[in-house]
Length: 452
Image 1 (tube, rainbow, N blue to C red):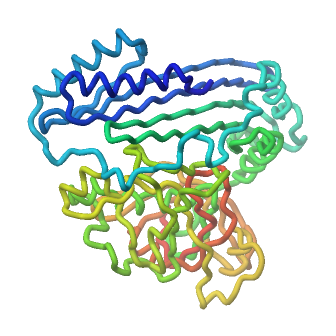
Image 2: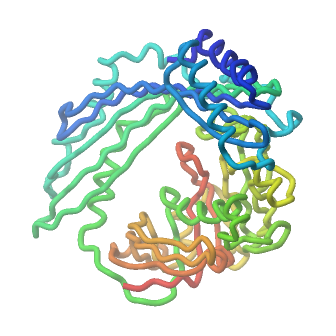
């Protein structure tokens, strides 16, 4: 269910109401989403849900003061009362003259329909409840396991959704983003001959229904559960490490967060004063592929309406970009950019000490190149310090020897510092899962500390 012409008109009226009530400037964001979910338990339908959400967010700039308000009552009379009260409330706040709308020259001009990036699937409108039920049941694998293990339970979820967002401001901004999403995920629990239980999970997602691979998820989840049988801690020490693409973003996200304006301004970032400096391995290049047509996570503008840009975030280990919105730029005296990384992608690279890598480089190929070490397939909790970059994460996965998986491991901690870790990067593959918002391939590192 997309934003209607009536709702677009109400958004415009809301801006007019804000000006009439005494606001100097205003921005209005209308978000609308619809999600349908069919969940299965042990091969049968267990839960069905239908969720519609619609909200309007109003950012007000009044007499040097700033405030944000939201409502889901979208009629002219309700909006007028809401806006007038919001403006009056804003006048009661302390001054903050650093708040402002972005320069109109920086805002997106081409996102007029919301479908410019090709993320909307017209097939969505024709997906019926029966079709959703059929997808969920066909993907379920209960009763299809193997005779060597006992399948205790299987929980699956199919969902599809549409998200539509419209941003307007009093300086003439008007941009829109529309996308659909189709997802399926399943968790299986098995029991071995000794009565020990293990769980495995797998999922897939796509912006187009035809691209969703729901039926392979059960087999992959079952394989991940079976792979844990007999898992035990490995020995302590420094090892080479391969991190699977499925969980590798755990190591990239804190780096991107440390480049955010708020963290930098609050001195709560381990990358303060790093702009333009080589901080990481020369093999670490992270590009923002914000405007790539047809790929999950891409957007033409951020929440302020500022146009996104394809370009380097980190290039050959050098920090090229801070994420500075309009407010933070004025507080910090830095040029504004966009407010966050949109679709970061780690570029393929292989260290000269590993030789060359021809063809596709995935986790299996990286293990062959490294010889032996620990292969991480998942992280279990842990924490990191945003000021220092120190981290401690629980891990699960396998040891590998002679380039092949040897034995499962669990109940181990991986510890270190993000700057040191990324300076020990040995290789980055090219096996990213396109359904992930961050394109982080399988990664290889050296000299990583592990302990039981």
